[in-house]
Length: 358
Image (cartoon, rainbow, N blue to C red; front, side, top):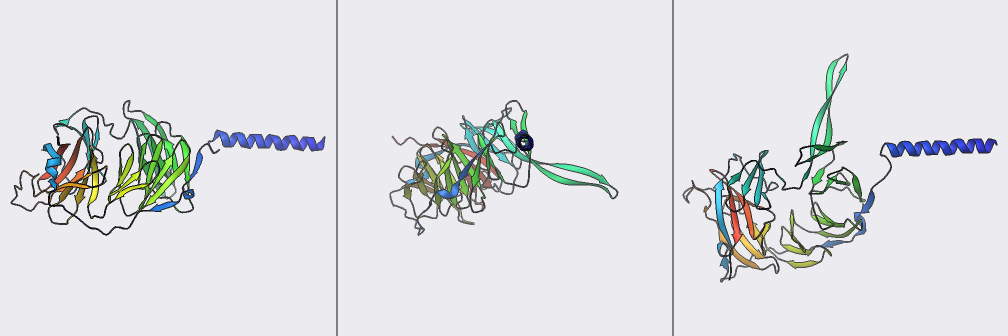
């Protein structure tokens, strides 16, 4: 009887502890994805050669300027991490904490339009001050939070306190620290595991897959199988996607499902966007006029280039040194794309379209 008495107490205590942990959400409900289990594929080292065939078409023969207009932005520079985004015939621009929407056809500003360029549910970071009173007076500490809002209704869907971890957000899911969460519910879906610190700079999602850029490395995760499927390491600082491939900024094409290298170029030109069947390249030349290039994305072959020569300013007119800087949308739409162009007299928005080669 004594044994049975203590046995029942032990069982009761176990049930109580299990209930408390479950009630407070401390029980593990997410799956672990170990990214170390996938072998890293090294991209080839490049020799930085720039071949230019004599019979090459000009950039304007392939991708022509459609229209352009000066924007109300007044900024010293346009950061490369804030390119315009395109969705359903609209161009969304967010500079200096000011959001504007433009028509992709006419480059004219559209008012009273809600921004869905990054999806319906927006996950963002913010801070709160927690005040305390003592004999020495009042003081406060900064508490970090992350929350999600519904862009249509404006409602706050959820809010969580975090401890100084990085946030990377995509349309349906976000990465908070090492946790992949659902943007709508805040539910922790997966946790990334690695023997080394995980510091993700960029995430993109599509068709059940998640792609993460970690320093100079891209990691592909199959969300349905709950596992990392490939890792590619190379000298790049950005990547772009279409239905079947990933294109790195330093001119590599990678199969999205297998991580296999499809083509690889040796050039100092960096890819900055996609429009139609072309990749747009940009050569940063310091204080010289920028050069813009077009590549066939199916083959990686150089198709055309142009020396801009201050063609996009209204005030310079070729007489002043302007050195315009281009920031293209990462992904075009319906053979059209857009770019922000920083000149001496302001920031312009230009739209481009693929020329009819028939």
